[in-house]
Amino acid sequence: MDKFEPLVGFELAGCAIRRWNIIAFWGQEWDNPDPLEIRPTRVFFYYPDEPEPDRWAYRETGRARGLRGCGAMLPQERWVFVADDGEVYAVGGGADSFESPIVAKPYSFFSNVKRIAAGHAYAVGPRRKVYVRDSPGIWRQLAAGLFADGAQTKVDASGFADIDGFAENDLYACGGRGDLWHFDGTVWTPINIPTNENLVRLCCASDGLVYVITGGRELLVGRGQRWTMVGQDVTDSRFESIVEFGTKVVLSTESALFEIANGAVRPASLGARPPMRSCSFLAAGDGILVVSGSADACSFDGSAWSVIIKS
Picture 1: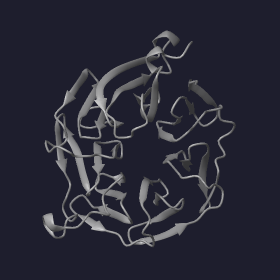
Picture 2: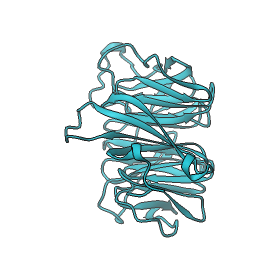
Picture 3: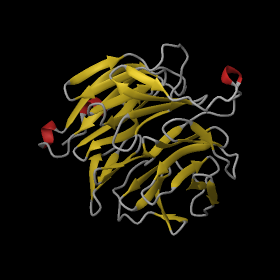
């Protein structure tokens, strides 16, 4: 089958898994290089178990600077997409609409949205914003402990780029220059860590450890108040994404995949991946790993790779 026509002209910016047979991508038209430009944006849905002519669908989500998405399971199973400015689009299970934005304040910014522990969608952003989607159109802020001096708390070099958790009462959020926090279901607690690097992405893995990508091409690994830095010399490129797939913690750069084994970073042992122009974006869940670049994508089921989008 030729490339799904609505994908043509759109540069992919992420991927997510709701179930092994319900995969989403999102992308934008880049007709100029300005990263602050508001661009036409689409979400694309891929159903690998459908007959080939029926495997793709898409929705227009209007114009946005950026978009991120996740497959939430609570309070109902839905795709939840959040634009940079907090606009929310939910689809699936009979829903297909824009909901109320996360916050009514103008000039808000959100850096990621993620499903935590097979539950709700959580959205995070600079200045330590954390919100959980309790119900359609209703997001609750989780702020207890984050602002010791109230509105006077200085967070210019702080704020969240990512969130993950072992459970919804055992969350970690990271961002800014060494800004790492833990949430116990009631209050956030700051964590002292041995770096002041920007914290980019994190993953709470089934081995009980939290893995954090830093802007310095290193990894921060630990839990609670015990953390160590893991250096590496296998790549000079910046790590872009991190997920757990099976028993592996997998990382991506723009051009290669890596894994963490015995406390060290090494090239991923996932077999021969189909050729891709780039492989920055990762998603894992329900027994599959999805790898996406700006123009192509593939999936891995633990034994074999499958091409989803060929550039």
